[in-house]
Structures are given as structure tokens and as C-alpha cells.
Length: 74
Image (cartoon, rainbow, N blue to C red; front, side, top):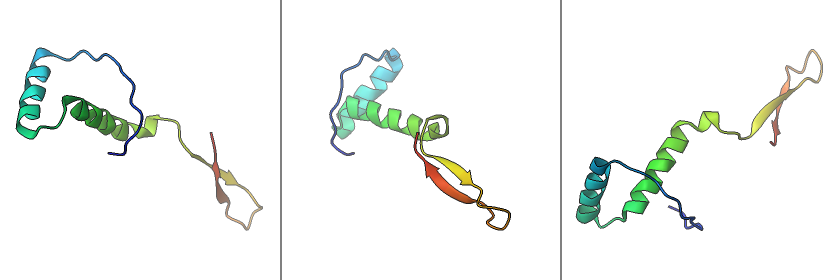
């Protein structure tokens, strides 16, 4: 994962999630926070179609052009 500035936030998890994350941490020595960030990344990737991003604009240059796709910044 790329290094970037992190912010502090509060997340409430179930006691079972906490227990399993602690077990995973003990076995792998990977910090629990890293697993939480990885989980957030997986959800963001899964739902990226719902997030704003680069849209495409079809430019009509006449009847023979077939239309050209141009990037449209949000």
C-alpha cells in the first residue's frame, strides 16, 4: 500500500470482529488498522461505479464522424 497521510477516525465493530482481527494480528503481525484499511479499499473498489470520477462526453462532429469520446473532468 502506498504511504499517505492518515487521519484518525472511530469505527465500531462487533466483539466477534474484534476477536478475529486480534487473532489475525497475532498470527500475521500485521496491524489491525492495516486490515481495516484494506477492507475499506475492497469496499471502495466494489462500489466504485457509484463514486464520481472521469466521465466521457460524446462529441458529435457531424453525421460521418460516428462521435468521438472526450474525457470530461468533474
